[in-house]
Every structure is written in C-alpha cells, then in structure tokens.
Amino acid sequence: MTAPSAVKAALTTQSIETPSWAYGNSGTRFKVFAQQGVPRTPQEKLQDAAQVHRYTGVAPTVALHIPWDTVDDYADLAAYAGDLGLRLGAINANVFQDDDYKLGSVTHPDAAVRRKALDHLLTCVDIMDATGSRDLKLWFSDGTNYPGQDDIRARQDRLAEALAAVYERLGEDQRMLLEYKLFEPAFYTTDVPDWGTAYAHCLKLGEKAQVVVDTGHHAPGTNIEFIVALLLREGKLGGFDFNSRFYADDDLMVGAADPFQLFRIMYEVVRGGGFTSEVAFMLDQCHNIEPKIPAIIRSVMNVQEATAKALLVDRDALAAAQSAGDVLGANAVLMDAFNTDVRPLLAEVRQEAGLDADPMGAYARSGWAERIVTDRQGGQQAGWGA
Image (cartoon, rainbow, N blue to C red; front, top):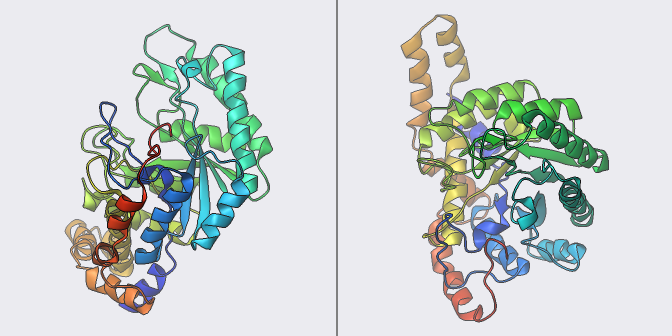
C-alpha cells in the first residue's frame, strides 16, 4: 500500500472549489426553506466561504453565478475575496431563468433570443477578465418537451454556433467547461444530455473546451468512473460538480448517497493523472434543510476522505492481480483501501498545516453561526435568483 507520507503530501496539494449559491437559500423545485443568518450579498457569501477554507484549508476558491452574484465592480469583489484569503473561481452563466428562455436559450428557434443568451455568455467572459477567473462553466436547460416541437439537428447547429462564438472570445489562459444533464426541465430531448454530446462539441472546439462531470446528472446505474477514465484518457475532463442523488438530480452533499462510488471516481482520477492536472474539483450542492456552512465543510471533508482512500490503493498489487486474472484479489485491493479509516491520517494532515484536526468541531466552537444570525438582520437573503 502507498506510504502514508506520500498520501499526506498529495493531500496537501488538493483544492476544492465551493459554490457561492450553496451559501444562500436553495432547495427543490417545490420549496426553498429560508434559514437565519443566510448571506444577503456576494460579499457575505464570501465571508462564509472563508470560514470553510479557514477550517479545512483546502477550499481557497469560490465559484460565482451570474446574475445571482452581480456586482457593480467585479475587480473590487476579487480584491475583497483576496482580503479574506480567497480567490474567485469559475464563472457560471445563467440562461435558464428568464421568461424568454422558455423554448431554449442558445438553441431557441428565435434568433433574437439566441442573441440575448449569447450576449450573456460573452458578458460572463468579461467578468472572468475582471476577476482573473480561469473557467467559464456552461449548463443549458435547453431542450424540448414534445416530439416535433423543434428540429433536433438544427438545435445542435445553433448550440455549436454559440459555443464557437464564446470559445473565440476566451483569453489565452481561460477555459470553457461544458456540463451535461440527463433531463430536466426538458423531458423529451435535452440538447446536452450526456458526456458524449458534451465531448463531441468540446472536441470540435479545441483544447480550451473541456467537459464537466456532475456526479448527480446520470441515469441510475451509470458507471460514472468509466466516463471519468475515458475523458481523462482523452484529455477532456475539465472538472467535477460534486454532489449526490438518490433518485434524480437531488444535489445532495457529495458522498451522502454512495461513498463507494465517490471513492471509485477518485481512484480513476488518481489513476489517470487528474489529481495533479488542471481538473477542477468543484461542489454544486443545494443545502435545503441542513445548515449551510457545516454542510459544505462536511462535503469538503467527504471529498478529502475519498481522495485519501484512492491514494492508498496499492497500484502495484492491483496491477499484478489484474494481470494474473485474479478477480477476487484485484477487488480485494480496492476494498482494502476503501475500508481503511483515513480520518486519523487527515487529522494529521490538518494539524501539520496548523489547522484544527476536527473542522466541524472547530467551526461549531467558533461562534460564527451565532454571529451571522445576529448581524444579518433585514435585507433580502440570497437564493435562487438573488
């Protein structure tokens, strides 16, 4: 098995991006339950994100969502993040909440609506320029609900045209990350429904276009680690949106539904060189009934634990068993790593970095949760659309 010292050294290089919207009120399609102390501004979201980084030490970047995080001066917002020990991460475009997008955004049959959506995407690149962000993350709700509603092939043409225009606008060190989603809200056809569609568009665009794997956006039983392995092999895995789902797209805490799946995914990341490459490890979660900051801390810890177990896999023993056709022996190598309690090892990593060994306990003792309830009185709480 890999030496603990090597595992600890690798873990110190890990970075997990948290999403600004996870600090606001969010939930299901049916109800969003408001909580006390929720941020009212992008600045207050960053304040909460700084608490996650303070106690985990591995969450230095925060993704923004436009227009939910619109401010007058994005350079000032980036400077504010810097003062908190953070950086602004991926810029997430929103072309799914405007009434004009009922029949689609960049794939809409009306050229005027497509132009409006494209202008928003290009504005997001402008924001990247101001914030120093590397990644533009795109997810489209575009699709159709009924057979014959629109021309399936024409919609792919429109999508390709919009993506090409955005790609052309990217700076030298910027990337486009294209996310896919099996369904919702388009129930007949979704214009980017799977990794193959996303991969095909990114492959045609070029090196700066990469695929995002959202761990909750697949049909039941999908072998997500296979997708990860293939995209890494092709150099097209740009990042993850980590979450969990039990039935559909629940956006629950990563590792909540199937910790073993998360471990298998992270093993393929380690095996394929993704842990030391440009792959972005991002959370995309909706904390509806649980307190938000502790939930995000727990999510970060879950990713750390899955990563530590993946790093512990004895790859030499695994390769030997695989070469010998030893099915049970090969499986046992993986299971030995998965069943290892890595919490003491991670506690050592944190202590050696000058952090508390117990991030959850340290946050609970900090008084931040009580402080924000007292300080954030009045105003409009942030949430979906705000």
